[in-house]
Image (cartoon, rainbow, N blue to C red; front, side, top):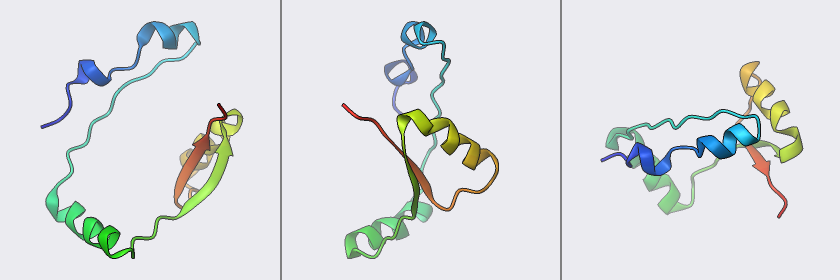
Length: 81
């Protein structure tokens, strides 16, 4: 069962105050797709390509990389506390 959309919905007021908009997207995983990944993770053989790792200030560069189809794995955005 998917999480309740209201529970995970972006805070519209906080987003608006920052000049942003947001939405929640849900996907329903299916066992046929996730079981092999779980097996690989349990075996320690699951490899996840991460490129690039960018600071929050360069998040738009990461989005541009995705939009251009140049992503070579997961794009990670770091946030300094």
